[in-house]
Amino acid sequence: MSRQHASEVASGARFEFGRNWQRFLDELDEQRLEEAEHSLTDMLEAATLSGKRFLDIGSGSGLFSLAARRLGARVHSFDYDPHSVACTRELKRRFFPADPDWSVEEGSVLDTRYLLSLGKFDVVYSWGVLHHTGQMWQALENIAPLVEERGKLFIAIYNDQGGVSRRWFLVKRAYNHYPILRYPLLAASFWRLYWRPLLKDVLLLRPGYAFRAYRKNRRGMSPWRDLVDWVGGFPFEVAKAEQIFDFYRKRGFVLTRLVTDNNLGCNQFVLLRTGGIL
Image (cartoon, rainbow, N blue to C red):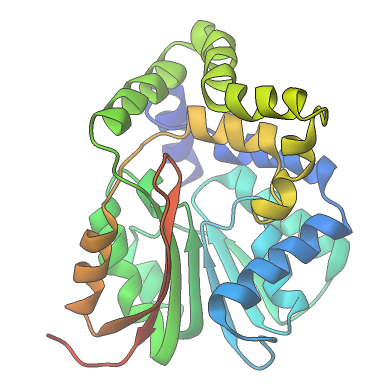
């Protein structure tokens, strides 16, 4: 699997998410951890995850696997990117060394044999991951059986912005296919995405406030690492909120929480598995 991943990166077909997350670990602190925990408890409407089995699909930096473990869950984390796996293992080493209730593996959400070996979970979590597989709808299909009866599925998928999304697809593809363009594309994208809040902060005599507040409003994440992840994030697929809702309704899920994004970000869904198949 690592060899296939390396081949895809070398050909420009895939962004190295894990290398970006390795740099994020240097910025991790207690406040970011607390914000990550809050985002889980808020969306899942649960003060604790004690006694729950939590599956983190595409664990990335490992931040949310760590947050779930601190909330009391028994956690299984996996990622297709070997560097993301290394990040998650590093956080486990720092905070929960030799903990039998947190396992970390390399695996693919498109590998149905691997998924079947995992069993079922009370919470299946995949934030901003499945649209980067290159086979988003198949990935969405594959994870449904992993959710326990009356369990919750918490996913985030890029919002379909029509022509805007298609233009960002071209930017992302160029970033990965032409390394010489990466810094110019990052600089242009930074200005495109942030000039309004930067100008607003200057006019309000609070320079830099938007970035200081970023971690609180964005699940404890880093604005620069998120920018690199956004511009480089490839493969890249999108969906309208109603498409995700209809897809899972037909598979026996009921929507319990929805946070929509009217811009370029992710729509967030928490769905309860009721077992009824339409």
